[in-house]
Length: 226
Ligand SMILES: Nc1ncnc2c1ncn2[C@@H]1O[C@H](COP(=O)(O)OP(=O)(O)OP(=O)(O)O)[C@@H](O)[C@H]1O
Image (cartoon, rainbow, N blue to C red):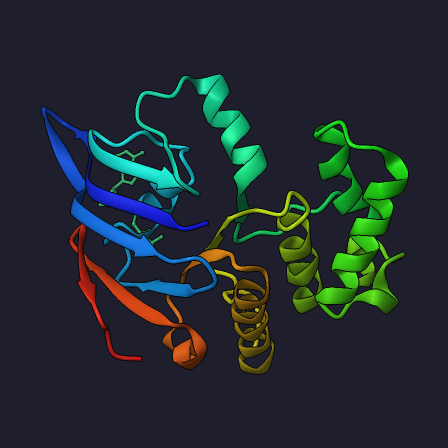
């Protein structure tokens, strides 16, 4: 259940030339551990997450998700891989205004063609896991920013992912709520054996992650200071 990026090079078109966003990046995230990715704006953090999520194919290098080498997979196969093995938590929860917390999660199962009752039970269980049992029937406008982010995280766990990719989970939260979200993510990774990557600007909450790596100009530095 690990995530392995090997020798990743990613370039974007830039005028007449190419801009190198990721420059020979190696990242191994073992199952049950959390790696925080920090670095200045424009250093390549989002690009790294998008490559790990198989949303962008790198120019070269290898992405292995839960033992599956994604090199050469067709778009349909990549979509299936993402649905079955990868959870993505975007910065903005993007919750549907008219749905309760439980229903936000059930939608995920519905997309996978799973049955209603099982999905509801699983949704309830996951909301309980993220501390939102008492908020299960509330709609997004009846939840705090931190609670919405927890729904977002629970939703990403509906498919029981091997790999969880999280983009700036604390950016809209105060210090205490930000810390609680990072603690929740590290606990979930350990308990469920998930390989988790958290991209963040915020270096205040990282004492509980297993590892911090810094991206500088598209290159990875290990053991960045916390
Ligand atoms: N679609 C794109 N086309 C061209 N250049 C891009 C594209 N996306 C990102 N870039 C460039 O690639 C580099 C890395 O961008 P990336 O978004 O990965 O950085 P980041 O570390 O996530 O930044 P931030 O912290 O500001 O979100 C930047 O120089 C950016 O301008």
